Length: 194
Length: 194
Figure 1: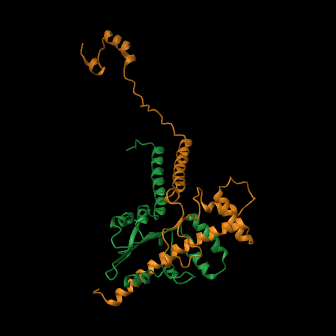
Figure 2 (figure 1 turned 120 degrees about the vertical axis):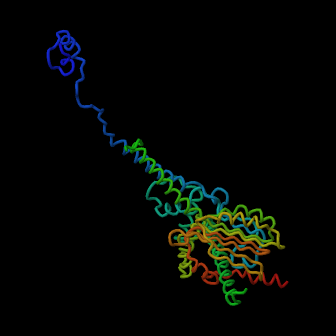
Figure 3 (figure 1 turned 30 degrees about the vertical axis):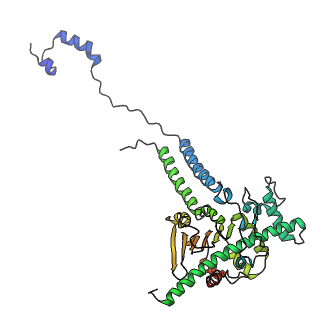
């Protein structure tokens, strides 16, 4: 008996070998394609939620920055402080007061919102206004209506003080810029050596 | 090579970066406001003090009165302060030279040592020992903030304007629009003669 059958299944076969083949045949290699787990598509809802969360983060961050109290609100309430009279500064102010005189009480909410709301008085139900917002609205009403009452006159005076403060600030800024211009002019005239 | 980072996480990451950038730009816009609180201690030392704090609330009140006015000059002032968010001035006059230290000034100057601020002009005058620095904050193509520090032997002035301002119009403001000049130099010359 040759061993060809064991080598390439040619030639004479041995019955014992054939029996073993039939017994073990079920365990032989079965060639078949590789089956990989199919990737499930990610639900679009998840992408939408992620995008919405990102947008909310942007908006919330912006709102937080916009709404946080500024240096002015927290530490420096609006005021005009003149420790001692400065004649050359106060000559044009209508009511110079040589003392600490808070012009406008500190407010928690901005005057801009106050004025915007006051132009639509009575149209819509708005959140309850603060005292300062009511004062600002009254000033605007008095400014439009004319013939102010005594309390209105006080409010008008506060508004005038606000304007005086603004003018004083502008005067300082303007005068400093003009001083710079004058110094530059003097330097030019005196020559580069100076 | 397939990325191991899921697409949704990348989306959130980029949204967070975008959020930080957007919020940083908002913060940068509001950073033209200088903290002048360190100068408050000079009020006790100075012979004369002027403290002008015009924030948005005071500005709104002042705008009401300026809006009410029909004078053409007031209209020009209204145009000038159109988008200004605040004007802050600290002006001190001391009895003797050297009553304040440069550390007081440096507390303000350090805030201007910032990429968003640029020194526009520096004027030094040996004649009266003054040193004036003009800083501007440029946002886009416009001046978004102004700071002036004028240091003299017996005087210290700090002006801070927050918001867009036309410097040319501002410098023309003194002596016009019913806003007289401050005559700071003239007053100082008189005191020097005395």
